[in-house]
Each structure stands twice: as structure tokens, then as C-alpha cells.
Length: 226
Image (tube, rainbow, N blue to C red; front, top):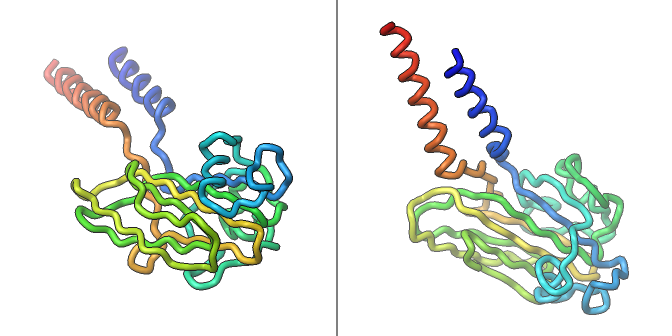
């Protein structure tokens, strides 16, 4: 009985310490049309370097809002972005229900970072990033595609050559919009919006859980033999 309680306590502790992540992306938003002192280029983000400076560089600061993304397709479809006069909440659509932080700000001068896990096949994977304006896509720590200026909505090829077996890989997509009239981003493979994958448990946790299961089975056999 004590052994069973011990196994149960360890299993519950593992679940609390390292819960399996849901199949969603994490979204972060920076409002760069507010006159914040740390924003470069007179608060107009019109190039990738300025956007990266705020997200991870010399002008780094906390995101103004966070949300859960069920798929990167904002506002909708691959051919027509929304308006920068929209609020963040309306632009996110159904995903706005998870929004924490700014929601009523407009989309003028915006930066987003999406992170999570996606499934990739072995060999060549043909993705596209649709963006108005710029972006940077990283998969498994490797930069796959980027655009560093401003433009109308364009679909950019993003070819990822997976040299290992098919499986789940981490990704990061940073996207920005300058102070123009339209804003939109999507992330697709073969025309379909890329779906998030659950984050796999660390190998050590999988081994430990497997060991606990085996130990439990061994204990049950001993009890039956007794």
C-alpha cells in the first residue's frame, strides 16, 4: 500500500512539474505606435532589425499582450489582410477570448511573436508565410525565411529541409506591421494553415514514467504471487 502511494505521489508531482502542453501556439503582441521611449525609428517599425530589437535585442521589453493562437491565419485567408484601424481583439477573431493585456489598441505599428511546435516530414517541407509587412521564420533553431522591409500582402516560400526523421519541431515566427493601412499574416503548408502540435515530454520524463509503470506492474505481480 505504501509503495502504491509512493508511485502515485511521484506521478502527480511529475504532472504538476511538467504538464503536457496543449496543441496551441503562444502569441505575444507589442504595440509600437504608442510613443514608448524605447521604441526605435521614431516608433515606426518598418524593418526587421527594429522589430527584433524590441522582441529580443537592445530595446527589448515585455510584450503588451499575450494570447493563445489556434492557428496563424490573421485575419483570415491568404489573399487579403485586415485594416490597421481594427482593434487587436477584432483582428484576432476567436483567439481574442484568450487575450491578456491590451485589446482595444489598433493595429498601427504592431509586432507579433508566435512560438510553439509543429510537425515536419523527413526531407523537404514546403511552407509559405503570407505577410504584410515583414517577418522571420525559425524552425528547430534554423532561420528558414525572412523579409525585412515593407510591402503589400505577399506569400513567401519557406522551404525547410528536415535532415532527421519526421517529428515535432519547435518554431518561432516574428511578424511586424508598420504604420500603413493593411495588416495580415498566415503560416501555411500546401495551402492549409499549419496546425500546432503538443510539446513532447522530455526524454527523461518519458523514461521515468515508463519505469514507474514497470515498477507498478512488478509490484502487482508480487502481490498476486503472495
